[in-house]
Image 1 (cartoon, rainbow, N blue to C red):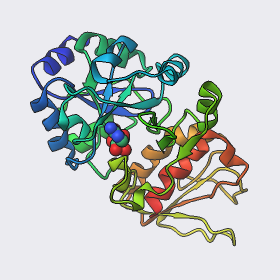
Image 2 (spheres, rainbow, N blue to C red):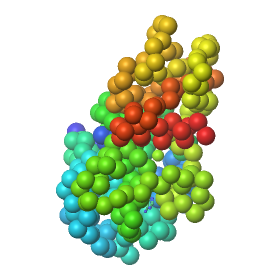
Image 3 (spheres, rainbow, N blue to C red):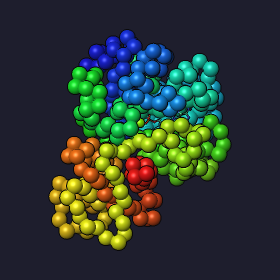
Image 4 (cartoon, protein in one colour):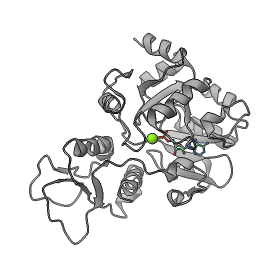
Length: 310
Ligand code: AMP
Ligand code: MG
């Protein structure tokens, strides 16, 4: 079933495929022309490096110059899964992947189809399979919306998590999380017994060590706003995403997650895209409490929604 896609990848074409986080736009990690196509198709700035996806931890040593004990512990604990690790790179890793940095980002995804594809194709670079600036795709239809009906997508329905991987830099200490995701800093600390920094302000920092974090991602055309604590007046041309406070009546524009934050993460980008289809002016989101922010997926939601707001 995957033959056609593997053939395309081998001939230097790009193919979208599902992971457990979002759909990725795959290209052969050893073919610079194929990788350039990823940047062209997405309209992605050349200084935003790509994550290399692998299907076997033995492939790490082709890309990483040094694999520490902590790296082994983290790979054992969280791979395959939604954790991207940043290593010092080997000289043979293409500059087009790393945007000229001396580090490389690696992930072994968990989705069975991504594993099958990667086992046949070898390592693939794979940013999210959306036009730059659009919300990441969580369904094959989202990819086709951005890149056209005939675009090659391995279709596996909806992705499970719905938000991008945690990105952790272990190339130098202290280790830094550039992007929160389903794997939490607490879970990471537990495995390595070391503190991990959260890179809070990289979006404002031009020399950010993770260049991608300075670009505005994740946002729909509609303006995204936090609901103020003083109460809500419901307006017509808006979508409301609530999770805890009571609502007068639910309807197709007032979604209540009833504390199910995994489902909120799973659906967020689809809701954003849907708001744009309906040409809504606003998406209003209920803010999260301190207690709710203990939950890693709520931290990831907070990060993506804050970026969409700013
Ligand atoms: P995505 O567009 O979802 O694939 O995002 C990948 C993220 O990983 C972006 O924020 C990139 O800036 C970040 N990233 C990839 N490679 C590196 C690297 N070598 N150093 C720092 N951040 C990286
Ligand atoms: Mg992306």
